[in-house]
Image (cartoon, rainbow, N blue to C red):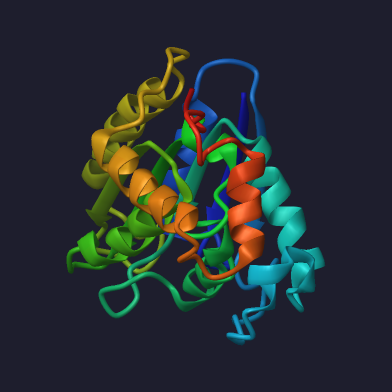
Length: 231
């Protein structure tokens, strides 16, 4: 099984350690590949919209391609982000912005509709819900059908500072998550994804997309007819 970790920070803090625990606990002989932001992508989307016509026209295409190729090949995605000011970390948000041309509203990738993902976020004491929601929205619109969220207030500023009782809970929780992610059964795409995909399909079919290039892409994949990426 191929696992890709997308880490919303450069340092290996509490959030990273929890994500890595999950990756290491998934059964089988797994290949784990890690990316860190901003180390592996230190750019912001400039809103030039060149990617709408040609993804290779993005000024950061070569760097982005390395990461997205790994994402497309992965069976499981583990996305980690500390909770910064109640939301996702800025470096991870910057990377998410650079993926918008792969969303269902533009040119989604077939492979995304068969992946599992887990979102991990920690905070000192506040809720991580908003940070995880930022990532969940992106994964949903990329087409990922199976998303697990794990947020926890670690009540510490570092992994070493977390109380042993809290770490014991994390150990139990990560074991349960890893067991779910390691299952090999077929992933079912939910009704919400199907509804949104069909809305985007009708938009493209009627020529209401952002570019004729997008309609051509949907036609090439057979999605304007009966074919669907999850079938």
